Amino acid sequence: MNLTLHVWRQANAAAPGRMVRYDARDVSEDMSFLEMLDVVNEKLIGEGKEPIAFEHDCREGICGSCGFMINGAAHGPQKGTTICQLHMRYFKDGEELYLEPWRATAFPVLKDLVVDRGAFDRIIAAGGFVSVRTGSAPDGNAIPVPKEAADTAMDAAACIGCGACVAACPNAAAALFTGAKISHLGMLPQGQAERSRRALRMVEQLTLEQFGSCTNIGECEAACPKQIPIEMIARMNRDHLKAAWQFRGAGKSGGGE
Image (cartoon, rainbow, N blue to C red; front, side, top):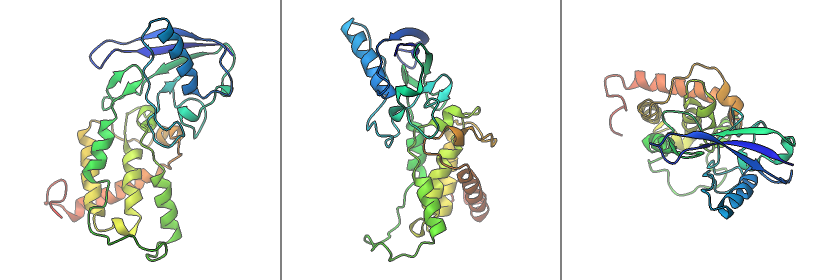
């Protein structure tokens, strides 16, 4: 299989970027997309040229490190698939592919296809955790959790924070990511003590990071490799509205614990 790649090359956040054409020859259909890029980079290095920078870690669709646009689609054409799990068999011989980084003010380009997703880390640091004492690890069935709540929490916990939802959204909103993180802990007994303040603080940080506003277009759900349902955004909005009313007059983040 032979492919033509048009890759966004950008030396750093301050430098201008441009699309550069590369030929990928003798590509095996059993390769993952990142393995194909590894082969292209080996050729570039052999020629004394700068390899294409892209982010990766586990290459098992778990860590959320990999991610860029392929022909305008976040993580490429296959639904529910990360780029590291996307195989070349889904492309045709002779196809032209355009590779670009996530595009969002909150995700500045660091180099080529790599963006800074530190905004997600700061949203988590604002409240995406349980800090109150919950005791030692209990037995599996010691704390009753309704199955519906457990299933919803597990669905939300599947979010790997890759940023595809932001890249796919015309508004560059991060509502699905933030909603998933708020819903995950908000559905479990251990997360109830801080549920209201968590919603206030994480949504406040979401706004500070200059993500766009959610207008319920639904592209985030369609692009999510873990298929997080858009209902997580509704859960976030409900918790935030309830918390804003509960802590009215106490400051944006609800004051201290």
